Length: 464
Image 1 (cartoon, rainbow, N blue to C red):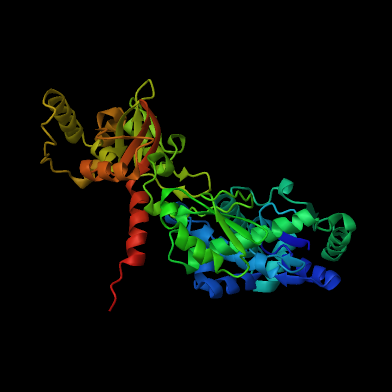
Image 2 (spheres, one colour; image 1 turned 90 degrees about the vertical axis):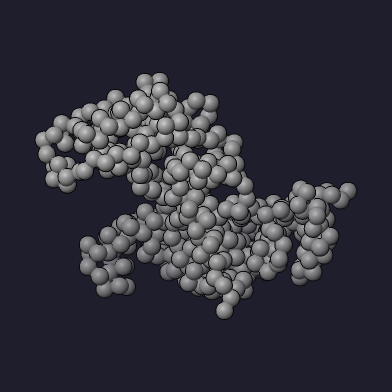
């Protein structure tokens, strides 16, 4: 029961290789139809699944792990389709949908750029330059997608059993080589591999049923399986619904026995994580903060001009390749401790001497009278004054002269409840996350708003 999983870049010959392998082995070939069947079976939009699986996630999708839900649906359909025999898969996710199952033979297909460009030009009737631009953009998008979804560089050769380079070997020869390998006795799955795949198939299907077709909170239970026995595990929340959960899972076709971590019997198996609800759990500040090194930060003695350059040129790049445009700069002292924050507004104010001098005076007053609050300024700003030699001269003043003192901060282990309460209470859009007196990261209101806003948009429609 070996399965061939083909991973490839766009227009790299994946479908042709699958067809050639089918002609030699007679095995079932699956690709796009997995998405179609998963959408039908689990009641989601096929278009939404395609977009979610084929594009890097936005912040909300990363936090709620929405894309992992669609991977779950695809996995459940795919492993069930191949449960009774051999198969060839060349769709989204390639080898990673099967995780590290020992009966899966992972193939990476690599094609030269000109080979891919020619294929795209023939298929789409585009120019050479258009084809090159399209393929490069697709490659970058897939790289981000692989990092987000599976935490890997999807085209890393060490992740595969064999790498086929079409610059050195044509597709027909590649199919001959792969067919010979998987047909050899050495690559026939052992009973242990078959058992592992059977357990993975059942655990994945149970997980998908719990998520898509039940009213239970899928966050509270972990699913494992060995053969036809399913084991459910969880803490107090799981214990409260244990009996109903066991009865519901027992009714799923293919499940012959259900045990729990509260039973005497211990059943090891293939673990399946059901953690999909980060947005509605009270997680910690460290779970949503942006790393400090990726967020713009400057010493307080740096000039306003240099701060303008830094903010204009900055883009926060997360580990998964997602980019966020920063709205603030963190201001540090000589010991690299956070002493203030500056936004575009403060930088513009710094170009007008009267405002900067007024803010300096207000700061001195507030140091003497801490509860004086903000003192309103009635200075009229002439638009053309921002384009004068005086504005240029003012831009060489230290950015520390216009920064805002930090109103509030939270610790790494503070909950999201504390984070949002602090932001709303102090009226701040950026909140430093401290580890002792050092900045460990920052939480920005944009990301918090995206999480809540998406939930309201999805669930806030009144029934007519």
